[in-house]
Length: 371
Image 1 (cartoon, rainbow, N blue to C red):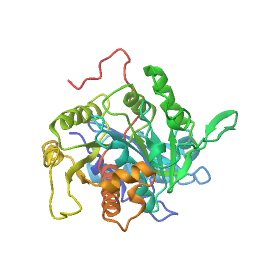
Image 2 (cartoon, helix red, strand yellow):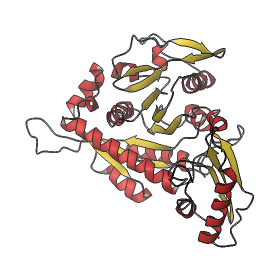
Image 3 (cartoon, rainbow, N blue to C red):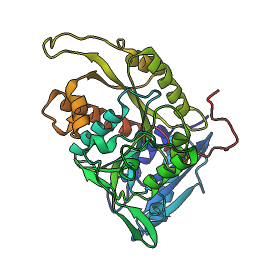
Image 4 (cartoon, rainbow, N blue to C red):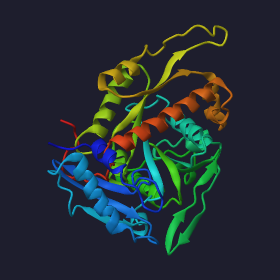
């Protein structure tokens, strides 16, 4: 018998911190959970200033898990204590959720969706960052009307730190800030992956609720570098309903959910779902096919987070540098606000019911195929 994350979290919700009067799951104290058959291992993260309750809480965890799951569970001696200082030594330790925005095929509107989702999340009051990891075709500077921005580079404890540009409540970093926008970027794989690593690890992100990573289309070194560098909370896949785009989307989904990478898919977004002309507001024209992502989501048992139509204002917002999500009173702004709500709910469900993602360790000489 193998226990589930949901069973363990359900049991540990009955363990309250004696001073804060909240359960240790709500407080986010349970980290690095590992389950192997009957063996359960995890860490309890404490504030450095207050570690007097370590022994008491470890004992309470053991007793509660044995009472809830049975005496056969192997938990004794498998709970380690960590101070908050140790936890924050990890890269991006103040970022709660790292969300990859991916597409199997180019031209499906992935960057447009990522930009508007970032703005919509920020409008909820969340602290949001966006990394333009589409190294070969960075478009975030254009979409946020900051093509001429030059992030400040400073030194902290002798290490170089990049200060993100902030626009519409979103912290931004893109390779586009450091190159001429008219230059073609002809980089070999290692150069591109090094650029991504710098944006991620040297960015002064501070505390964030969500850090969105706008990935290049397809599956490449960039994707592998991301999952090897940080623990990705989940991935959102963007596609049009067209069969050609869906075929490539499936490849991307299989890459992330394969055993060697194992990053959960939070859901699918169907972009360019239909076209409605302004003069015929009741009409829908399915230019790229009808409901392709909806059918794929049902087939793979994934969430369909949104169906976004072809709307002129979305294109205009991207070209002018003012994403439509900035105005939540418009129909398109409301659509992205609803998307943000669904994404937040999907992340909460993933956090409560699935084991935390870890950085991926991949043998450089091994194939990353899913078969």
